[in-house]
Length: 430
Ligand code: ZN
Image (spheres, helix red, strand yellow):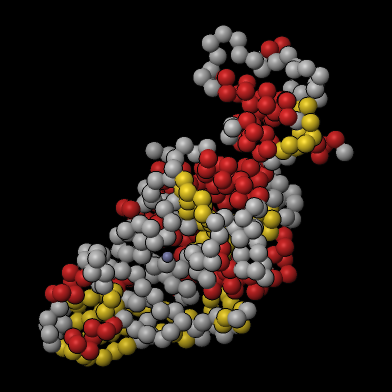
């Protein structure tokens, strides 16, 4: 099992118990844990701040919540799972009958053994979520109800990690830090984003600068866009990362543009991942690509997932726990993200410096002798394609697609040929 997959799963498990929401101490605590791995900047935006058509809400914090039966037993207990409380519930302390309580209880009759996850961010409400099976056990009689929460002026918190590259042009990556105890949605993406940032930071150089956002859903991206309106034109490519820790294969939702280089890069990489994958056109429903791709911004930002939101049984329930997330799936997701980044970083035009007939590869030790390595034939094929096509016209991605070979094989061939003096990046010729 890959060490990085295990490390990412460890982070998911560490963050899982924290009760997060779109504001509050759960987000701060989460970002504090991430700061041990990544020197990210934490921003606080005061409640009441106008962000386009929205307003940063009051800050929500919760200490305890329960429904107690007459015998004093907690029949619903926030301490057992933070999903038990309707996220963003206003405070309540009351005694009531089951009939009075019932309109505030939410279950999934179709999945009687899970606690559903529900929120009420923008409409004042209170409630509890519980297993349908447990609801059926509740007897008539009176219940003590407590939600020891506060909803008051404070701030919205988000994390931002900026990694400079040779160019000010940016690659924007974003993920959610607003879900409470849910693992695949979206701690998996948080873990992949952290490992991706660490991998990028460890490289000696980068063509692009990278900006990685750890933000609450919807209001976080709206807030970030409102505060960075003047500089978003630097974003040349972007990905919203979500649900990357469980399920077979990948799903990619294209940017609103539909033909942005990021759309092409992801589709190319997924076509060579040797796993099932689905490509969807942009739609104005889903994660924060909705805001990044709103018509006033129309940024080239797509969304990379494994099984899309809402399309797996565990989605938004207590069954989406760390056991549902697999280290191997996390590692594959990271690998896929890195392959996409490599396309963005390394796609350029080259010129064959020995264009009259094929150069003699054997003389340079580039051609298989006897019983070469397993993938030697593929490597040679990649070199032949790069040499043949590199007349300053097609880029490496163009060549990879024409050859039906993965970009990384074509890029590796270009690197080998360049080091042997047979190839030069077009930009170096100026
Ligand atoms: Zn969600």
